[in-house]
Length: 349
Ligand SMILES: [Mn+2]
Image 1 (cartoon, rainbow, N blue to C red):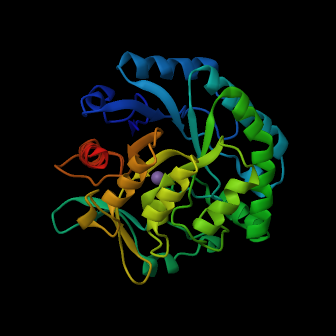
Image 2 (spheres, rainbow, N blue to C red):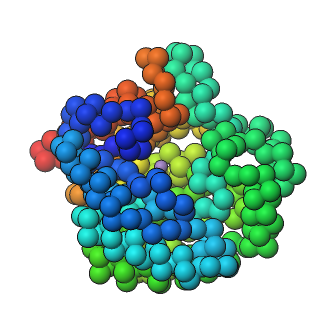
């Protein structure tokens, strides 16, 4: 495995020099952020980012993410133009040495929480999702106030998007995903870039929007849409794991054995009976997921892809982007390293 860390570029309050100081840290996961969704990234921006990462002594091999334009998900408008742009991004990134591209196929919002700074008993803060609060929100009434998304969409644009999606069924979304994959996977194969879809977060329909990358059955279906190693997964334990019906260690074991996991997002969540969940520290006992079982499945199948500690809490007074502080994610990386080393040495005996 190759340990990695998400970094939002030179404007990220977390310094890349500090990331390098985390033991066993090998690679940066990042993206070009100054280009509107759907456009081609300039070679200059890509190469500048690569240089910044490599000058810091880290590898530039994973992009998270190249966002998919809503027209592609809707199968409408300028879909074919945006797919051509997407292909060009794959080619350019492949040339720059990128090995894995993470993306998702979630309509409108690529994650949803009800609060980004819920204070826990120990004084740390984290992202949470409370069912009761989400049920009170009505995006079609134009009254949506969603943490993390308030400034991303103008009210009118959001209403317009929701209207377009109101006619789209899950089957339509599958059809549009298949169309997209059939176009881009051959390009990814040629460019030597493995595509790694991120599951839906949370993994069920929300605000009436369809969602399909949600469970084992659907991931099986996804992998068959284009049966190529280059059509693979970002297996996010926290996103899939906030649905208690998903058996995360079992899924990791299955897809690692099939060599279809290219990127692991490892984090823990504490699930509640009503479907609410809170993001917690990585340590197994802090949440509902068995982290040792997850890492054991990876070690067992000689996982050689990338791992990053996913969201962390805000601890030790750190201020910054919710979920993306330095300290708790560094603890997460150290914890995963410890599990990996411990489990590997036991399995060799
Ligand atoms: Mn994730």
